Length: 150
Image (cartoon, rainbow, N blue to C red):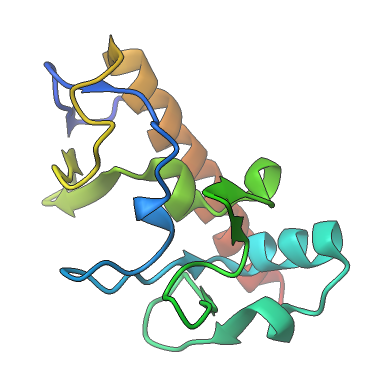
């Protein structure tokens, strides 16, 4: 299947490990949302019940949990600007500073200028965006398949 998509053709990005994406800022309240399999994986990896690090949410399907934050508004898994669950971090974290928008069956990648890693590092290719798009598609298909099985 050929995916109709627009992607930023002149954007550079390199994570500068500032942690801005992992919590609230003065300008923005972050909602780090998780799919059920992601919450399950974080739970398994950390040996913590989901209720320890996330709250159940409704109305954001297919997402079913939102990551808890510390008093300072940062993700509970952020320590010294380092993600302690990086290998199993949620899809939304893997996408940042990009977001996938859909309209009339066409997908567009948007990005936020608030990220200090934008316009640093290498130029991102169409292959990079196709890779993260496919990652999202696989996760969403898993959700659809598991919900049909229940």
